[in-house]
Every structure is written in structure tokens, then in C-alpha cells.
Amino acid sequence: MTFGQRFVRFATDVVVRKPRLWRLFRWPIRRSFDRLAPVWDRDRSIDAFAPVEAALDVLPEPPRRVLDVGTGTGSIPRLLAERYPDAEIVGVDVSERMVDEARRNVGARARFQVADAQRLPFPDGSFDLVTLGNMIPFFDEIARVTEPAGRVLFAFSMGDATPIYVPSDTLRRELGARGFSEFAEFSAGRGTSLLATNG
View 1 (cartoon, helix red, strand yellow):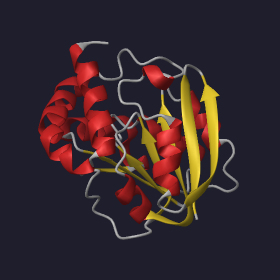
View 2: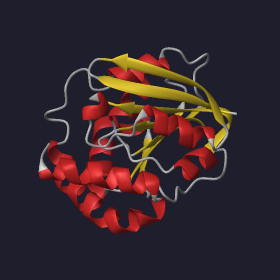
View 3: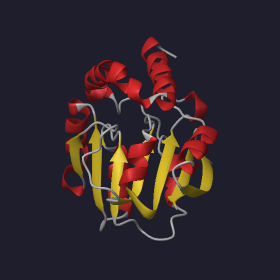
């Protein structure tokens, strides 16, 4: 891993254990992703979002309203828009330049805004599907914005080699403590994903 990748792995581990310490990492991580935004998609493998597809394949019905947290350049919203053309899709990211790239890449098929995942600007229970690809999770906020019986999908494009990575046992424990259940895990391409139901 590069220094930057080691730093975001360290930040992920710290923030998952102590979310209030995000304030120490917010600015350097935002600055790093602002700098990377124009070249972010250049080196992405073609199977980077295979774990997302694998989890979506088992959804019993199409989602109506989806939130992609840490949307980056909009890859997951673009995939969702192609699969669910009638869904309302919102992507948020702390990096303004990533959001600019997402708007260029996806256009009007989804709505994007700059927002901090620790304090999402949406009412309780706003979404029936929340997705996070290679993203530091803030479990309280995820639980808050997911409607009852809604689902959360975590994906890591390179499995445990992903710089921003949270082990599935940690995801299960933290989500379970907030009322999530029916966990399903997937492996596809080089990555992994986990799908959980609220309630």
C-alpha cells in the first residue's frame, strides 16, 4: 500500500471504533480525494463493482429511493440508474471535486451533493436502500436514514486489500446492535459485499 492508502486504512480503523475522531481525519481525507478526483477512474479494474452487482441480484424488489454514501465519481449511482431507471438516486461525498466528477459522469440520472457522512442532511427513514462502496461507515447515521425493512449494502472492491475496509464481523456486530438482521455476504471479482436488512 502507498502512504495515502495506509493512512485511509488507519483512519478507517480509528473512526469505526471512535466515530467522534472523524473530525481529525475529515480535512486531510477530503483534500486527498479532491486531488485524486480527476484521475480516480483511470486505474479502476473492470470488476471493481462486481460485489455490488452480486448483492443487488438478490434484492426481492427494486428500490424506490437510494442513497450512495461516499459516492466518489458516481460509479455506483450510474450502475443503479441503469438497473433501476425508476428509482430516485442520491449520491453524497465529502469531496466537492468528487461530486463534480459524479455529476459529469452520471448526469441527470442521479442527484449529487456534498455532505459529511457523519451528519447526513436527510430525514429519518428516507431511503429503502443505502449503499457504501469502499467507504468509512458511520453506523448511527446509516441506521437513521434507512427506513424500516430497508437495506444497507457495503462493498469493498478488493476485499480485505481495499484501503478503506471494514471486516464483515465488525459490520455484522455494529449493524446488529442497531437492529439490522438477515445478513448476506458475497464474493465477486476481487471484492466482497454484505447486505443487511433494517429490522
